[in-house]
Amino acid sequence: MSEKRIWTAGMLVIGDEILSGRTQDKNVATLAKWLNVQGIRLAEVRIVPDILERIVEAVNEVRASVDYLFTTGGIGPTHDDITVDAVSAALGVDVIVHPRARAVLEAYYETRGGLNEARLRMARVPEGGELIENRMSGAPGIRHGNIFIMAGIPHIAAQMLDALTGQLEGGDPVISETIGCWTAESEVADTLGAIEKAHPDCQIGSYPFFREGKVGANFVIRSTERDALDACLAALCEALGTAGFETFAGGI
Image (tube, rainbow, N blue to C red):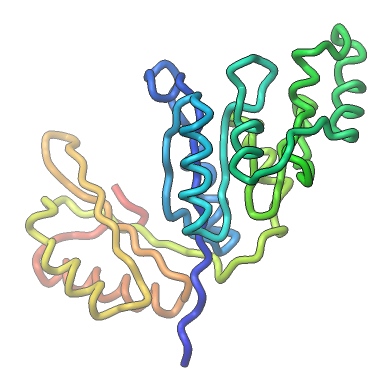
């Protein structure tokens, strides 16, 4: 039996505000969870400054190794919003004002002071790009082939992803189960490795914590196959129980 194809995505988080620590990114987790449902795995994330050459370089490097590339940030009305310029340069196409994007913005700003030059920047797209609907603030996202250019504001980015649901080709959705255990990772590391090796269709992630004055860990099992996931979960629970550790379904 041939192996199932694994569809992958990369992500560029664009903005000096992320690198400076002034703004905390929330889009990585949102995108990763959404991609799992689409049957696509988030394979790489980079945080890139507001420097055109750096964005161009990152776009070309990441898109060459994945099926889809998502960017967040840098598509607003100000001079340092240069994601569209960078993606256009990476693709070797011109920046144009998309007529439908302009019409959408004209309608949105009709009662909000009108469409000025700064706001018109949000209608700019790499030539050949299509629009991703934005039902919240008018300014659309952009799709150009396998590149998706989205807002950096988390609730708007999430809404743009919702508009894309079901439109991307992918594999089987990734499903997961979590169990918790009051034990140090080092005490069960060999067990985790052995269980994962015995269940090649599953991956086990270990996430330690310190709580209530003691150490523990949550173990997340991921797979695209329900039967494989259930078998791995049962084996892990049995192994931990045999070693004297109580497990808690859903995590601690």
